[in-house]
Amino acid sequence: MNINQIRKDFPVLERKINNKPIVYLDNACMTLKPKQVIDAMNQYYNEYPACSGRSTHKFARIVTEQVDSARDKTKTFLGAKNNSEIIFTKNTTESINLVANSLGLKRNDIVITTDKEHNSNLMPWLKLKENANINYKIIESNKDNTFNLSTFESIMSKEVKLVSMVHTSNIDGYTIPAKEIIKIAHDYGALVMLDGAQSTPHQRIDVTKLNVDFFAMSSHKMSGPNGVGVLYGKQELLEKMDPFIVGGDTVIDTTYDSYKLSPLPEKFEAGLQNYPGIIGLGAAIDYLTKIGIENIQNHEIMLNNIATRLLRDKVNIIGPSDSTQRGGIFSFYVEGISPHDIAMILDESANIMIRSGAHCVHSWFNKNKIAGSARASAYYYNTKNEITLFAEKVLEAIEFFK
Ligand SMILES: Cc1ncc(COP(=O)(O)O)c(C=O)c1O
Image 1 (cartoon, protein in one colour):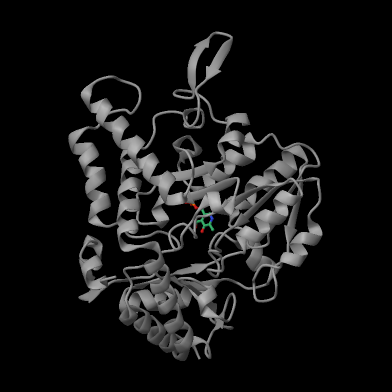
Image 2 (cartoon, rainbow, N blue to C red):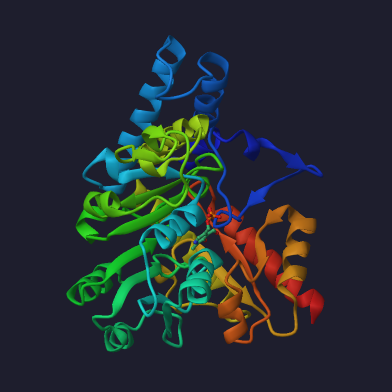
């Protein structure tokens, strides 16, 4: 992996602010896009800006081909069996909401999540608890924020309909033992959904080998365009589910008192879609595949090792102490110093961009009585020098507030 070469693909990395380079370490929020992705989207707008699947003219035929090709690439990238199992959505949040609202969950049906869920995999279940009286249960993580398989097994029963869990946490980068969880859940007859927003960009995903029932992800976290997400679902499950958003493209035919739904995947893709975004996602998948997802994962772990070595004596790191279990996420807090102040100082002094706060996982921070964390999250274009600079500036900030 030639990082210097890779960095040339990112126009934004050439920017200087106050005569200093930028150090972008907010990749768990959103990743940067290479020019190959930007070009693919521009090509759509410049050369064939039309609808997919509706009209028969030349532009429409190209868009249809390009969208089909992006779906095919996504299927291969996720290890799915059929293109009809890939539903394009707006983002992970919409993918999870689609399942929550189309699965037909009823009173007393049990849904289980971890205690580290992003609001996107917490709110849908809280709403269903309120509106449909589902029984929503949360399982406690270990003290170091890792997953406890025995606690999980002890809570499972035949009444559990769905286990919906964050695959890789955006608080600490820890990945749950998904294969084991799925096996246990299936033994009890429950379905499993993984929130793959933070796993898909950083590790090999194979939904078929995992045998997961639903998998949600966002393009913007893997160098793709904003506003595009994916829901993978097993074909036999998606076929039985009733779409919760309906309208254009979801139906083959209507009368004033009846409708005939389209086959998969269209029945879940209501209204005109984000064609340039979908095409851009296809380009992002090509780009990541060329670099190699394993190379990306190893590189991030190497960077996290550096940050951990340089800072572990001075800050509280969230998640397991072993940095190889935290992917590219280095999330920390220092008693008596606001994470926002640390983030501001890093930005002001060296254009180092990180995130601070509760990272949309307020529930975990509330439970643990931690006001928030500062989170640096690396991707394949970040360098050892950048991570070292980040650590140096954090140490300076701590000194400053002492
Ligand atoms: C673990 C996790 N789940 C879900 C989401 C929501 O993703 P999106 O805003 O793309 O829907 C995020 C975004 O930060 C995330 O980190």
